[in-house]
Length: 187
Image (spheres, rainbow, N blue to C red):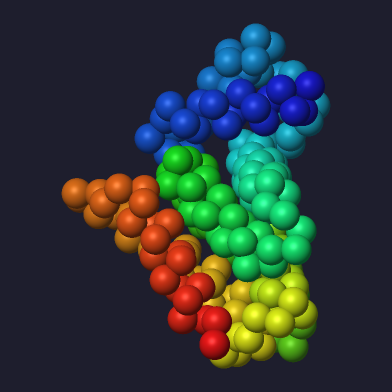
């Protein structure tokens, strides 16, 4: 039932103007259950929104990994490119979801502890792909971990500009930017 609730909330988020319009009653109606039934899985609306953000990060990660898996294992650069393209496409195709996912950022328990959370997991996924590129002989201008941060921040920034532009460029402009960014990171 939790999965059905999250899937319905995800569909509603696509139709609504943002997470503020997402209500327990509306999600319950979309699932075909009583609103009280949602409270068996989520303590309140905030917990539902948090669960939805985690659900969407899972969808994004699956999309990225699926794109990567379609490229031959011996093509580390192609696999990295596929990861980044999938990230950009998901973010552009799901603007409300993407805003929800990136609204809170990473969590840090103390200044000397590395932040954690689903955003950091994506950065690490991209950094690991850069590490595989380096291991396969592709030279990087910066260490793989740093390259992952640069690529993520650059792609995220370009997607944010895409979403905020009055006259939006085509999806290809964002994907091409990701390729240009990669070209700058490779030596």
